[in-house]
Image: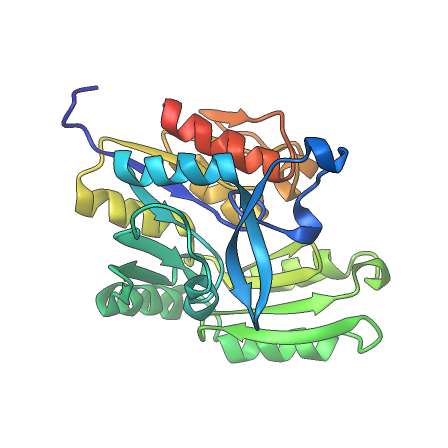
Length: 269
């Protein structure tokens, strides 16, 4: 690849590059634990971390490639994160529903997303009503709508009835929606709302010759499959089902060490 070639790196954030205290996965004496850098503060409390080594790698990556943070977080939730290195020129939020250009949402992209959803999917209000109607207060902790695009429930996972998620997924599929259970969250997302579509749009705009991606969850699968080369950690929903795709590398590390390993592999590529 020539010196003028453009590489685009689109990476999920939570439990891929950045980690909450509960997700760090450190099982070693404090003397051997890596030094951590806080990259997110919420309500005055530190929330997410990377290793100091990963911080240096990410800063270098931001100068060496078109680095595109790619998240299911809303714009407001994404704004709480401050990654090392130059501010990304592009970021993907709300699972592809918003494309940020120098921190500002692109209204044309959002309008195009809304048109695709309206053409192929049942209305959000219908899906949300079904979620609430079928959920049991005994295990439903919270219900949320993100950016007027998709809905999710926060649940007590151990109390979920067998088959409930499967039945919900079958109901949603007939209406153009997908369902996934990730940790304590049950997501209902319109099928056209994908991280991969937004990544392809950024790749078109910057003239990328090659795309790299990373992610750990079911909502990242389309992103990893669409990239030329991709990485996932040895934890998460994709690891639980043994998910793979052409060009995918599974890093052997889990927890915050996986985030450092993925950042290093992005640079080595």
